[in-house]
Image (cartoon, rainbow, N blue to C red):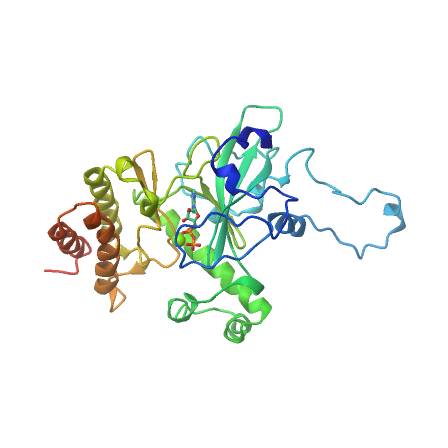
Length: 331
Ligand SMILES: Nc1ncnc2c1ncn2[C@@H]1O[C@H](COP(=O)(O)OP(=O)(O)O)[C@@H](O)[C@H]1O
Ligand SMILES: [Mg+2]
């Protein structure tokens, strides 16, 4: 299974399971982002834990390794662990593997970030041709997280259980897990909303706790699409990309939202197709008193990349204006 990826570019960035933990760093392009190591196999072990406290003699001689693990792969498909609202919107694309006999195999890290790590995951039905690649974005809990986006953004999101709020405020391990879960839930909800509105975002497959599974933007061999910031001049049709971006941002604005953290690092370009990612913090531009300034900041941030590639600066300002109108913030 793994061999299929052995020749791809991205595989060289991926640490196979069992490789040295302090070995090679995942490739990074924006040096502003610190890197934390997170070990996929541990995440899977967690999810396959079984109750050790069982003292029933009946099980004494049972083999204890992988009591009900799949015959191949790292875990059974987690599809049935998500409730209907934790699954992506209809109409569901045909490539989504929903068969309960499917198994998930992890092919390593695509990218580590400040709050989350993104892994390449295959979901396949053994003995058939049915397989799909997905990006698994896992929000980090407890130890290795920085909370730079938490204050402000999460304030005001009322939490029903005050025990949870208190734990979050105190940053206990439980509180951190709750925060990670809230970010994952916020991003999953945003992806569902934006995908349904026609914005170019990865299709959100499902969420389980702090893990979001979504459409992998990249090729069949597991090579992730480059971010806009890494796109080589000869690969970039600036006019066409600007047009695609404008269309998505108009749909977003029409729906009343701004991305909130838009930059050339949160846009992927796969063979000319532009896809916006990293949306947990989308901003309701109508309800938020600073809505318009979030919208302006987004467009100017990403506009700077386009201007550096020859786009006339007045087109950036023109987009700001038309989006403000689209969001009914003007006139
Ligand atoms: N759906 C996806 N398909 C392919 N690569 C992805 C996908 N989502 C994220 N990535 C890769 O992972 C990186 C980090 O993801 P992002 O959502 O931006 O998280 P962060 O909050 O860490 O910035 C991206 O820059 C991109 O390289
Ligand atoms: Mg990002």
